[in-house]
Length: 196
Picture 1 (cartoon, rainbow, N blue to C red):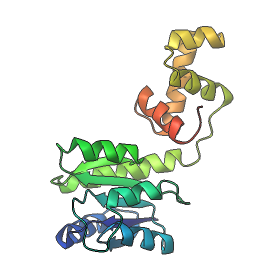
Picture 2: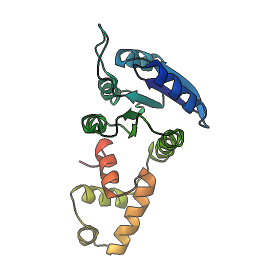
Picture 3: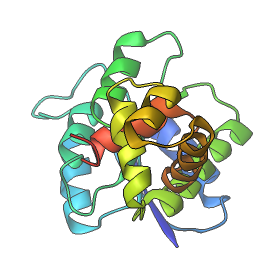
């Protein structure tokens, strides 16, 4: 079963997200906090599988951490949660910040109910597929060469494999990592220290 922790300074947003998340199959517990300080304190007591973080712009007096800064600190937590950030679609600064802190995804404030459920489902599926990926030695070699920007043909020549064989290894590692394409696989590899 999956646990969810929601962090946003607006009560209406927290309540709305709670209603959406409670309708998702497999979600067993939903907790809510208003800001980053509370997020860190709650997570230390009750770790969650998924953390939904709003892009807060102002902090109340005495509060140190925004949702995003707290999410960054959670990136080194054990267990490490999957972070889904939500904010304005044109807020490139926060989208970039979300990616930088290792967020699993970014969702618009005005996303529809089906879009929110789909984003959560994607994280759940990806998590189940990538939590402990067991790559073969050859798949790991292909991923490492990919991270250096080598084409399938170049990788094949270095590993003395046909280009088609390299593509097959690539398809297998994409599936194991839950990656949609090469860049996604390389990003995962870098984040999880699978490649230097």
